[in-house]
Length: 582
Image 1 (cartoon, rainbow, N blue to C red):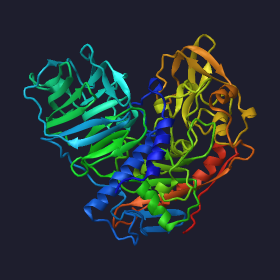
Image 2 (image 1 turned 90 degrees about the horizontal axis):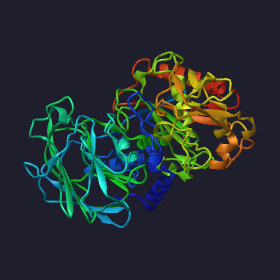
Image 3 (image 1 turned 45 degrees about the vertical axis):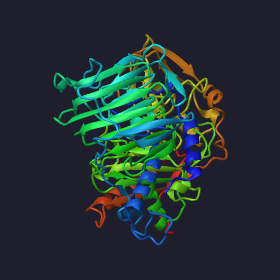
Image 4 (image 1 turned 30 degrees about the vertical axis):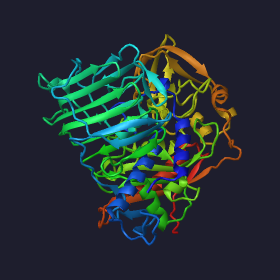
């Protein structure tokens, strides 16, 4: 079953919303929030591929609707907690590596499209070319031969960046040690990933490594007998880049068990997950990949669809916890949010509507995945995750419906933004002159020491005046002047911390600087929504009731959240969390 034209049109909007490559700021292992500008595109890709797989394998449950694979009556209400029991469609299946000994060819079709087909190719053994001096999580720049310009998603490149971790990027290196996930694959730099996995040349045999062979019409990169980090699992594969833009992956033995295989133009945009064994040949537009995994994943949009089979379509946010251990979308994240619909102008986001994909008819705005309930402390106000309590985590994730995407001065200046261009910059005084100790959306409360140094004195303490303006709760005239530390010696994507001393220049700004870049918020605070409806959802495994104490724990979170949100917004906003059956 192919996705609708509407689905592709929505992803084109998301592509337009993606930040330019030069402005990208990537995260690191210290961060817990997996929210990026491309999270919705990944969720749509996962849901679309999962639905096709369930239909193809013919083991979908009978939901009484021939045209849909998802959505069931496996819902119940316990107080004001919605309990959804997996019916076999909420969890994606493990997907073992199955491309060893084969090949895949990508042939360009227009500016952003590729036709993908199986290819009868082999990896040269031993590999030809020169061995690159690569270590663990390492990268080397390699120039193409004279006169060789490689076309990739509408751009031409005279060099490439070869990474030890089974991938090639263009323009920007990406040797970070973070999870090799579809999130990073999609939202990072332009990337060719024959087998994106954590490989370590430092522990490889003397004859193993990463080799590059260059000719007048083709360049071949071979990852030869490289061990997965911390294991003796060896993998051998290659990528051939032809001068005409054709790309061919060849696979020999692949012992690593999890990897991402595909190509991406970088910085989000349209994304399609495929099963290369079952769905080729095919022509696609934008990023494309197969994600191999030994573990089950979560289909968030299937959760949303199931919720609306039992409850009214009357919510701004769906807030989901899992009653079992689970690795989240993108790997490693503690929690994340993705927007379902946005109609608000002037907040750094495009106008889009994916509500139908979530089972809503235009009402739903945001999906929050909080992850496994067992990871959270029983006391919702106990600080346990950096500077965050459960309420602070919930504040950030629900706040992502509006925040933090603002530019300043002009639309290409991300000075306020840090990690993934979706959180406030560490060097931004995110509370301004407000009453709090820094925003839940990160940044910090910064003290100007008056001698060219600055100290962070508080963090993650509700919503700042700037936050409240973006949320539609405060007029622009009530937002005090702000500043950020320009030229700081601290990474702007660093996690919030108290007591950090930085040096740099104080760069003052006002709300008018932001409005000049983004335009005014519309609707303004005079007419914007002030009360938001949020449903609290607990997902259990197939055939299982909630774990003892889980519903009670979520009820504590729910009731405290109503109070916290009102306090964090200085009484300007409110949430309602009561459930309304369908």
